[in-house]
Length: 319
Image: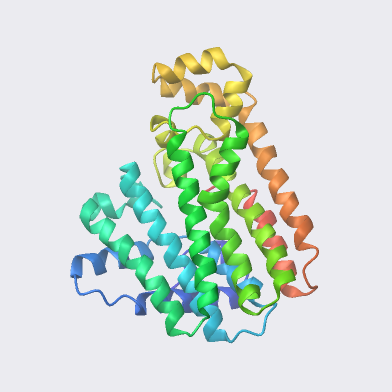
Protein backbone atom coordinates (compact mmCIF):
# COMPACT_ATOMS: atom_id res chain seq x y z
CA UNK A 1 0.00 0.00 0.00
CA UNK A 2 1.40 3.37 -0.99
CA UNK A 3 1.21 6.63 0.90
CA UNK A 4 -1.07 8.70 -1.32
CA UNK A 5 -0.20 12.17 -0.11
CA UNK A 6 2.38 13.83 -2.34
CA UNK A 7 3.80 15.88 0.53
CA UNK A 8 6.34 13.09 1.05
CA UNK A 9 7.57 12.84 -2.55
CA UNK A 10 10.68 14.86 -1.62
CA UNK A 11 11.47 12.52 1.27
CA UNK A 12 11.79 8.98 -0.14
CA UNK A 13 13.18 7.35 3.01
CA UNK A 14 10.47 8.86 5.17
CA UNK A 15 7.86 7.84 2.59
CA UNK A 16 9.16 4.28 2.74
CA UNK A 17 8.82 4.21 6.52
CA UNK A 18 5.29 5.64 6.32
CA UNK A 19 4.38 2.79 3.99
CA UNK A 20 5.62 0.42 6.70
CA UNK A 21 3.46 2.27 9.21
CA UNK A 22 0.37 1.77 7.05
CA UNK A 23 1.10 -1.94 6.57
CA UNK A 24 1.55 -2.42 10.32
CA UNK A 25 -1.73 -0.61 11.01
CA UNK A 26 -3.60 -2.97 8.68
CA UNK A 27 -1.93 -6.01 10.22
CA UNK A 28 -3.31 -5.02 13.64
CA UNK A 29 -6.94 -5.22 12.51
CA UNK A 30 -8.26 -8.66 13.46
CA UNK A 31 -11.85 -7.79 14.38
CA UNK A 32 -14.28 -10.58 13.45
CA UNK A 33 -17.08 -8.30 12.27
CA UNK A 34 -16.51 -7.91 8.52
CA UNK A 35 -18.34 -4.56 8.27
CA UNK A 36 -16.17 -3.00 10.98
CA UNK A 37 -13.02 -4.40 9.37
CA UNK A 38 -14.01 -3.01 5.95
CA UNK A 39 -14.85 0.35 7.50
CA UNK A 40 -11.44 0.61 9.17
CA UNK A 41 -9.62 -0.42 5.99
CA UNK A 42 -11.65 2.17 4.07
CA UNK A 43 -10.43 5.03 6.23
CA UNK A 44 -6.85 3.70 6.21
CA UNK A 45 -6.97 3.72 2.39
CA UNK A 46 -8.54 7.19 2.13
CA UNK A 47 -5.11 8.80 1.91
CA UNK A 48 -4.51 11.07 4.91
CA UNK A 49 -1.50 13.33 5.26
CA UNK A 50 0.22 11.02 7.80
CA UNK A 51 1.77 14.07 9.46
CA UNK A 52 1.66 12.80 13.02
CA UNK A 53 3.50 9.53 12.31
CA UNK A 54 5.93 11.43 10.09
CA UNK A 55 6.85 13.79 12.93
CA UNK A 56 7.11 10.85 15.30
CA UNK A 57 9.53 9.08 12.96
CA UNK A 58 11.61 12.23 12.50
CA UNK A 59 11.88 12.97 16.22
CA UNK A 60 12.62 9.31 16.95
CA UNK A 61 15.69 9.79 14.75
CA UNK A 62 17.28 11.63 17.69
CA UNK A 63 17.02 8.43 19.79
CA UNK A 64 18.43 4.91 19.77
CA UNK A 65 15.03 3.22 19.48
CA UNK A 66 14.94 0.29 17.07
CA UNK A 67 13.28 0.64 13.67
CA UNK A 68 10.51 -1.73 14.76
CA UNK A 69 9.79 0.38 17.85
CA UNK A 70 9.70 3.57 15.80
CA UNK A 71 7.27 2.10 13.27
CA UNK A 72 5.07 0.70 16.06
CA UNK A 73 4.90 4.06 17.82
CA UNK A 74 4.11 5.84 14.55
CA UNK A 75 1.36 3.33 13.75
CA UNK A 76 -0.15 3.72 17.22
CA UNK A 77 -0.34 7.51 16.98
CA UNK A 78 -1.94 7.38 13.51
CA UNK A 79 -4.50 4.81 14.67
CA UNK A 80 -5.32 7.04 17.63
CA UNK A 81 -5.76 10.00 15.30
CA UNK A 82 -7.95 7.94 12.97
CA UNK A 83 -10.16 6.83 15.87
CA UNK A 84 -10.76 10.46 16.88
CA UNK A 85 -11.63 11.38 13.27
CA UNK A 86 -14.20 8.59 13.05
CA UNK A 87 -15.89 9.69 16.26
CA UNK A 88 -15.74 13.37 15.21
CA UNK A 89 -17.55 12.56 11.98
CA UNK A 90 -20.27 10.69 13.86
CA UNK A 91 -20.78 13.58 16.28
CA UNK A 92 -20.70 16.17 13.48
CA UNK A 93 -22.96 14.06 11.23
CA UNK A 94 -20.39 14.69 8.50
CA UNK A 95 -20.97 13.13 5.08
CA UNK A 96 -17.49 13.50 3.58
CA UNK A 97 -13.86 13.60 4.64
CA UNK A 98 -10.80 13.68 2.38
CA UNK A 99 -13.19 13.88 -0.57
CA UNK A 100 -14.88 10.54 0.16
CA UNK A 101 -17.87 9.43 2.21
CA UNK A 102 -17.28 9.22 5.97
CA UNK A 103 -17.65 5.85 7.65
CA UNK A 104 -20.83 6.97 9.39
CA UNK A 105 -22.32 8.04 6.04
CA UNK A 106 -21.27 4.83 4.28
CA UNK A 107 -21.77 2.21 6.99
CA UNK A 108 -23.98 3.93 9.55
CA UNK A 109 -23.17 5.52 12.91
CA UNK A 110 -23.21 2.22 14.80
CA UNK A 111 -20.49 0.61 12.69
CA UNK A 112 -18.45 3.85 12.73
CA UNK A 113 -18.54 4.10 16.53
CA UNK A 114 -17.49 0.46 16.91
CA UNK A 115 -14.69 0.99 14.38
CA UNK A 116 -13.39 3.98 16.35
CA UNK A 117 -13.66 2.08 19.63
CA UNK A 118 -11.76 -0.86 18.15
CA UNK A 119 -8.93 1.40 17.03
CA UNK A 120 -8.55 2.82 20.55
CA UNK A 121 -8.06 -0.74 21.81
CA UNK A 122 -5.69 -1.55 18.93
CA UNK A 123 -3.44 1.38 19.91
CA UNK A 124 -2.66 -0.02 23.35
CA UNK A 125 -2.54 -3.60 22.09
CA UNK A 126 0.16 -2.54 19.61
CA UNK A 127 2.20 -0.67 22.21
CA UNK A 128 2.03 -3.65 24.57
CA UNK A 129 3.01 -6.04 21.78
CA UNK A 130 6.24 -4.13 21.23
CA UNK A 131 6.98 -4.06 24.99
CA UNK A 132 6.92 -0.27 25.21
CA UNK A 133 6.91 0.70 28.86
CA UNK A 134 3.73 1.05 30.91
CA UNK A 135 4.86 4.48 32.12
CA UNK A 136 4.65 5.71 28.54
CA UNK A 137 1.21 4.18 28.08
CA UNK A 138 0.18 6.29 31.05
CA UNK A 139 1.66 9.37 29.38
CA UNK A 140 -0.42 8.56 26.32
CA UNK A 141 -3.54 8.33 28.46
CA UNK A 142 -2.87 11.83 29.81
CA UNK A 143 -2.53 13.09 26.25
CA UNK A 144 -5.78 11.39 25.26
CA UNK A 145 -7.50 13.00 28.24
CA UNK A 146 -6.27 16.44 27.10
CA UNK A 147 -7.34 15.69 23.54
CA UNK A 148 -10.86 14.84 24.69
CA UNK A 149 -10.79 17.90 26.95
CA UNK A 150 -10.24 20.06 23.90
CA UNK A 151 -13.20 18.44 22.14
CA UNK A 152 -15.39 18.99 25.20
CA UNK A 153 -14.18 22.59 25.47
CA UNK A 154 -15.21 23.18 21.87
CA UNK A 155 -18.58 21.57 22.55
CA UNK A 156 -19.11 23.88 25.53
CA UNK A 157 -18.52 26.90 23.28
CA UNK A 158 -20.98 25.94 20.55
CA UNK A 159 -22.94 29.00 19.40
CA UNK A 160 -21.15 31.11 22.05
CA UNK A 161 -20.71 34.57 20.57
CA UNK A 162 -18.78 35.70 23.64
CA UNK A 163 -15.93 33.23 23.31
CA UNK A 164 -12.45 34.70 22.91
CA UNK A 165 -9.40 33.84 20.87
CA UNK A 166 -7.85 32.55 24.10
CA UNK A 167 -10.79 30.13 24.46
CA UNK A 168 -10.26 29.02 20.87
CA UNK A 169 -6.51 28.46 21.33
CA UNK A 170 -7.11 26.52 24.55
CA UNK A 171 -9.58 24.20 22.82
CA UNK A 172 -7.46 23.53 19.73
CA UNK A 173 -4.43 22.98 21.96
CA UNK A 174 -6.25 19.92 23.26
CA UNK A 175 -8.19 18.96 20.15
CA UNK A 176 -5.24 19.10 17.71
CA UNK A 177 -2.12 20.35 19.46
CA UNK A 178 -1.92 17.53 21.98
CA UNK A 179 -1.64 14.74 19.43
CA UNK A 180 1.10 16.58 17.51
CA UNK A 181 2.87 17.21 20.82
CA UNK A 182 2.64 13.55 21.75
CA UNK A 183 3.87 12.52 18.30
CA UNK A 184 6.96 14.69 18.65
CA UNK A 185 7.81 13.86 22.27
CA UNK A 186 6.93 10.22 22.88
CA UNK A 187 10.09 8.70 21.33
CA UNK A 188 12.50 10.97 23.28
CA UNK A 189 10.41 10.26 26.39
CA UNK A 190 10.77 6.50 25.94
CA UNK A 191 14.49 7.02 25.32
CA UNK A 192 14.60 8.83 28.72
CA UNK A 193 15.85 12.05 27.16
CA UNK A 194 13.58 14.33 29.17
CA UNK A 195 15.20 17.56 28.00
CA UNK A 196 14.66 16.65 24.34
CA UNK A 197 11.16 15.36 25.12
CA UNK A 198 10.18 18.70 26.70
CA UNK A 199 11.48 20.67 23.72
CA UNK A 200 9.83 18.26 21.29
CA UNK A 201 6.52 18.55 23.15
CA UNK A 202 6.55 22.35 22.82
CA UNK A 203 7.47 22.10 19.14
CA UNK A 204 4.68 19.63 18.47
CA UNK A 205 2.14 21.74 20.34
CA UNK A 206 3.00 24.84 18.31
CA UNK A 207 2.89 22.86 15.07
CA UNK A 208 -0.49 21.38 15.99
CA UNK A 209 -2.00 24.74 16.88
CA UNK A 210 -0.71 26.29 13.64
CA UNK A 211 -2.02 23.30 11.68
CA UNK A 212 -5.53 23.65 13.12
CA UNK A 213 -5.59 27.41 12.57
CA UNK A 214 -4.65 26.79 8.93
CA UNK A 215 -7.39 24.17 8.66
CA UNK A 216 -9.86 26.76 9.91
CA UNK A 217 -8.40 29.37 7.55
CA UNK A 218 -8.86 27.02 4.58
CA UNK A 219 -12.52 26.50 5.49
CA UNK A 220 -13.05 30.08 4.27
CA UNK A 221 -10.23 30.43 1.76
CA UNK A 222 -10.99 27.27 -0.26
CA UNK A 223 -13.95 25.56 -1.88
CA UNK A 224 -15.45 22.17 -1.01
CA UNK A 225 -13.81 20.42 -3.98
CA UNK A 226 -10.33 21.56 -2.97
CA UNK A 227 -10.84 20.81 0.71
CA UNK A 228 -12.48 17.42 0.25
CA UNK A 229 -15.22 18.37 2.72
CA UNK A 230 -18.13 20.82 2.77
CA UNK A 231 -17.28 24.43 3.58
CA UNK A 232 -19.22 26.27 6.30
CA UNK A 233 -19.89 22.96 8.08
CA UNK A 234 -18.35 24.11 11.37
CA UNK A 235 -20.10 27.48 11.58
CA UNK A 236 -23.47 25.86 10.90
CA UNK A 237 -22.85 23.65 13.93
CA UNK A 238 -21.98 26.65 16.08
CA UNK A 239 -18.20 26.14 15.99
CA UNK A 240 -16.69 29.60 15.74
CA UNK A 241 -13.07 29.28 14.65
CA UNK A 242 -10.44 32.00 14.20
CA UNK A 243 -11.87 33.54 10.97
CA UNK A 244 -15.27 33.97 12.63
CA UNK A 245 -13.77 35.33 15.85
CA UNK A 246 -11.68 37.89 13.95
CA UNK A 247 -14.74 38.86 11.88
CA UNK A 248 -16.69 39.37 15.12
CA UNK A 249 -13.92 41.66 16.36
CA UNK A 250 -14.13 43.66 13.14
CA UNK A 251 -17.92 44.10 13.11
CA UNK A 252 -19.61 42.41 16.05
CA UNK A 253 -23.07 43.79 15.38
CA UNK A 254 -23.24 42.69 11.74
CA UNK A 255 -21.66 39.27 12.33
CA UNK A 256 -23.90 38.58 15.31
CA UNK A 257 -26.98 39.38 13.26
CA UNK A 258 -25.83 37.15 10.37
CA UNK A 259 -24.96 34.23 12.64
CA UNK A 260 -28.17 34.43 14.62
CA UNK A 261 -30.19 34.63 11.39
CA UNK A 262 -28.22 31.64 10.01
CA UNK A 263 -27.27 33.60 6.89
CA UNK A 264 -24.15 31.52 6.38
CA UNK A 265 -23.48 32.53 2.78
CA UNK A 266 -23.34 36.16 3.92
CA UNK A 267 -21.11 35.14 6.84
CA UNK A 268 -18.77 33.53 4.32
CA UNK A 269 -18.76 36.65 2.13
CA UNK A 270 -18.06 38.94 5.07
CA UNK A 271 -15.16 36.79 6.26
CA UNK A 272 -13.64 36.84 2.78
CA UNK A 273 -13.97 40.61 2.35
CA UNK A 274 -12.87 41.53 5.88
CA UNK A 275 -9.35 41.34 7.36
CA UNK A 276 -10.16 38.16 9.30
CA UNK A 277 -8.45 35.76 6.88
CA UNK A 278 -5.28 37.85 6.90
CA UNK A 279 -5.34 37.92 10.70
CA UNK A 280 -5.97 34.17 10.85
CA UNK A 281 -3.01 33.45 8.56
CA UNK A 282 -0.82 35.74 10.70
CA UNK A 283 -1.91 33.87 13.83
CA UNK A 284 -0.94 30.55 12.23
CA UNK A 285 2.37 32.09 11.17
CA UNK A 286 3.14 33.18 14.74
CA UNK A 287 2.78 29.61 16.03
CA UNK A 288 4.76 28.25 13.08
CA UNK A 289 7.57 30.70 13.83
CA UNK A 290 7.52 29.71 17.50
CA UNK A 291 7.93 26.08 16.42
CA UNK A 292 10.73 26.93 13.98
CA UNK A 293 12.66 28.81 16.67
CA UNK A 294 12.48 25.77 18.96
CA UNK A 295 13.39 23.42 16.10
CA UNK A 296 16.67 25.33 15.76
CA UNK A 297 17.54 24.07 19.25
CA UNK A 298 17.36 20.43 18.15
CA UNK A 299 20.55 18.48 17.36
CA UNK A 300 21.98 19.57 14.02
CA UNK A 301 21.60 17.29 11.05
CA UNK A 302 19.27 16.06 8.32
CA UNK A 303 16.40 15.26 10.69
CA UNK A 304 16.33 18.80 12.04
CA UNK A 305 16.40 20.24 8.53
CA UNK A 306 13.51 18.00 7.46
CA UNK A 307 11.42 18.89 10.51
CA UNK A 308 12.02 22.57 9.83
CA UNK A 309 11.24 22.36 6.10
CA UNK A 310 8.03 20.34 6.57
CA UNK A 311 6.82 22.67 9.34
CA UNK A 312 7.38 25.77 7.21
CA UNK A 313 5.68 24.10 4.24
CA UNK A 314 2.50 23.41 6.25
CA UNK A 315 1.85 27.14 6.54
CA UNK A 316 1.52 27.43 2.76
CA UNK A 317 -0.65 24.37 2.15
CA UNK A 318 -3.93 24.66 0.26
CA UNK A 319 -5.68 21.52 1.60
